[in-house]
Image (cartoon, rainbow over all chains, first blue to last red; front, side, top):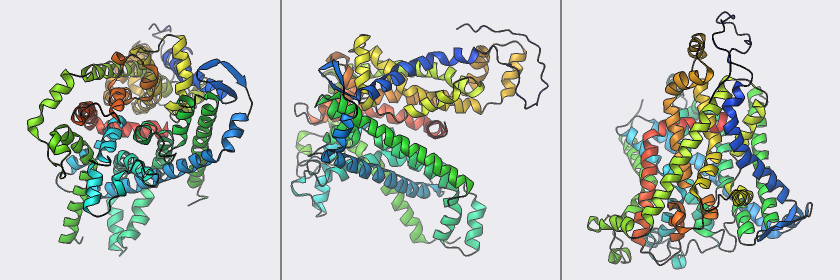
Length: 317
Length: 276
């Protein structure tokens, strides 16, 4: 890449002056030369397809004949919002996301507190605990499905042995147990990330404050709330945001374990969107469902920014 | 500080339980791959691997299509890694060191792409791929995977470059170095750990990717391992040991590499994904 600019211009600004310098980095086009290839990429593969998807959501378009696309305005949205099955999809999505966020962060915090104490082999333990997060989703879906196999799955054999067995063992075929099973698998994959992040947040908890609180006679819980929690609170907030976005868009684990079934019991927005597009071949409704997901994500992101700002200002504790 | 013996024991037990929960499914994948049929379907399952069955790994690679799948995954992952890091370094540099018109918009776009589900983008991308004849090609998957991982790569590298004192670059520039040279000679060596971390993230993003691969590839010879393994699920024709052996060979490099660079990956992920 050739960068056209003048070189050897004598430096006129004395060092240490915080004022903005008159373009010491080359011509005003220099930054665009650096970012243009990446920006073009994101434009072609993300921005343009997203705009097309927004357009699709206002049309009636069939997968098999996508060039014959008919503008129908808000019809897709009217239809999905008046469909009780879509209401259930929304409810399942909310349950799925909230459970993921709460349990992944709660479990992650517990593990982080556990691994924050000094003990021999702590480094190995910290490394091993990240294994689920590093495992590919496809492999996780496969092993989870095998472990939950009705006849030969180790989970059913274990549950039978302790007397908690599901009749017939068909956990993933049961509209009652499929969602908890999928949730447990998701959380198994997510908790290492939350625990590693919280562990690094815990490192910045000042130990002398903890000790001072203990000396002052504060109990464990009081010390935790007064010291530790105050330090890790921003991290917990950020993790909650990340977990929300990640579980809203999580696809292959659910798709491969249950395809959204049985009878829609594990159908989240993304699953619904994919099956509308590729099973029902209705691209318009699929796009509309996708837009609902995008709007939910946007609300979460903007909401969390507002809350964070309010907390910073001290309006909310 | 008070330390009860019971407390210490309880903590050891708790740590072991947590590690057991974390590692067991992968262990079980390994055990299942190394089980004889009679063990697999016995009333009492065998809880340890039967090392006499080790040939299953060799067979899985030699007989079926697994070796081809893994090779396709490798090509896609290396391509994505090279392309996304290659484009992400200059983008991260521009975001960190320059102020330019449209910077705020670009940053918001980068953050926004983090929340777009692949399943949503697959339909318009399918149309795009058909027009540019990228269906059924590994190149197409490299391009789309790079586009999806590029924002996080760029944001992580921006954060890393932010941490380098500007004075180093200014000194080089005073000696007549151009921006591109200061980037490659000064910044790149200093952010090498972050570059390694983003390379790992990009590699395994593409290694694990499923939705685009299953939608855009029809030729079985071009399938990556993610699609091949996914097709095993619910399919009765293949012995479960072979399935698990292939899945284990697919999982092991991902886990091993992540463990090697996990420190950088985690700090990069949180810094890049969250703070922007």
